[in-house]
Length: 418
Image (cartoon, rainbow, N blue to C red):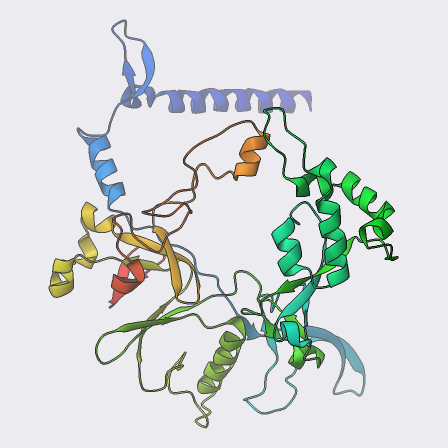
């Protein structure tokens, strides 16, 4: 055993020496020597102008983005079930869940995005605010005089909050630099709220009122939708969850005038279910076109999804599309490739395709906490203080002029939709 162990150690030692020699044998080919003949940490380039050529080719490389934007798909649930065997016994096996019916048009769908945000809004039925919504929210330092007058639903609570806010002790405070502190910051801090709740009768013309922690705030209906179909209650409304605007549709009429539309999440679910019917070869009630919102008046040119790439042609290229050689875009052309990020209504936002994220993105409140101040932050594009923009860096509206690029996983442009 001792001899065997020594032999093994000796073999490992020799093997490591040989591997070390093999690794260090490349030093002469890779590293540059100094005047004394010692190796430096600087590498030799494979051929002259290697760095320049590498930079030039990287500048012309199209980056591809993985698309994983599922909305709905068929469920693939499995359950343990007792399966009858030929000999009359039962065996427990894992079986795939069956559809509710044997019809090919019926299937169980799984929704892969949130249908709406967690918060529900109540519908106001009084004539003063007919059609608007209300929601309970915590009273905090954002409750200034304008917000209290215009947003607080209950008039008696509004009166209490205003009387509390207008007290002199909250309107005469100065900060360390001698600037006046906004009274709502002091009045509705934790200490200010405790003081208000101790003196409610005084603030409410001698009338009693329960302690105030939350109040009902008036909201515009906007794009909030009724959840009657879910809860069977048409007084409950919800707001679509963020990140559910998955398609931006670009239409064109016979005069080549463009129209834009962002279908909501509920529409997308219904559209994809209808598309599934086509796959099942159900020829009845098949929609004429995906997102066929305008019937025959407009033609759907193409739609964009997050991470899709678009090309912004020059005026000369619009008239002569043969000037754009997909297999060999030059540096100037590659710089006009943009990535679609998100959309809402008729607004579509883009960034240059080779930008990952902005380096500096701190809100003003965070800057104050960290005692720093930068005049420029989170900016990208012309006339925007955001990390995304409707316009190109040259100020051109992208959605009005872009071509959609179909790109393979290796970054090769396969097709252009104009």
